[in-house]
Amino acid sequence: MLAKGTNDNEPSLESKLSGGGKRAALTVVTVLIGVLVVAGSVLFLGKNQQEPAVLAATVIGTASTPQGELPHATVELSIYPNPSTSVPGPVPVGSRIGDPRSANAPSGWPFYWPSTSLQLPANSLITITVKQYDGSTTVWNNYFAKVHGTVDGTAIYNGKAQKEIEPDNVAHTFTIHQFAEVTQDGFFVSVPMLAVPSTAKDEANGYPKPQEITFSFITGGPGEYVWNCEDPCGNGYVDFGGVMSERGWMSGTVTVV
Ligand SMILES: [Cu+2]
Image 1 (cartoon, rainbow, N blue to C red):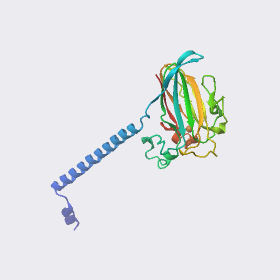
Image 2: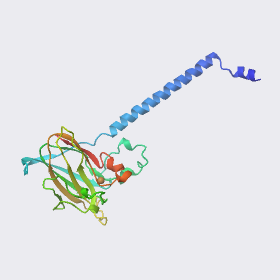
Image 3: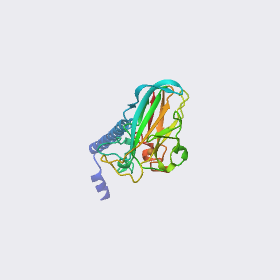
Image 4: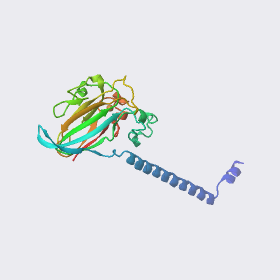
């Protein structure tokens, strides 16, 4: 019975070959699918991890500075607590695929707008004006509640020059924090962004009246730098994960040309 059954069940050479052929074909198809998935993911992630469109400073003339008469350029930024119909916010990047926070993260993540990729002219006075619409997150270190690296050590908060703000009134910071490469000029600027009071009511655009922060600094020679928010507005490890490390939201590049 066993022998008969075995013989009966023994596949013919032809079917063995076709079975093996099927398996081989299946293996090839499986590998091909894998290759396509990986290639597709690389393309997708690469496309989606590109920096946001560059926001170039507008040269408006010259200005007298402690370093003499220099070209003067301005940049206008906003910080929003969440996207809206009027402010769509950054496009989610591929790195968040599979992240358990991805389902609800983008809508509740604050972001700099319209871009986190800034381009500034070299050896120039740069004035950045920020309309800040977000609430506070207390900084871990009061160093980041102070103004560093601006022309006179101050930033202007709603028309008033200040060297620092209350640590628990910091919403975010704009900090060009990267240690310069040996071929680049040193470049460190850090300005705390004043928070909107928690009692502030939303206006017609869905956001409260913003705080206006203006600060000026002088660029050196050409170079590639990185800026980051240093106020722990994210999640994960000491609240520096999530949005804090996300290009397009709370970190970006400063290219001096
Ligand atoms: Cu932040």
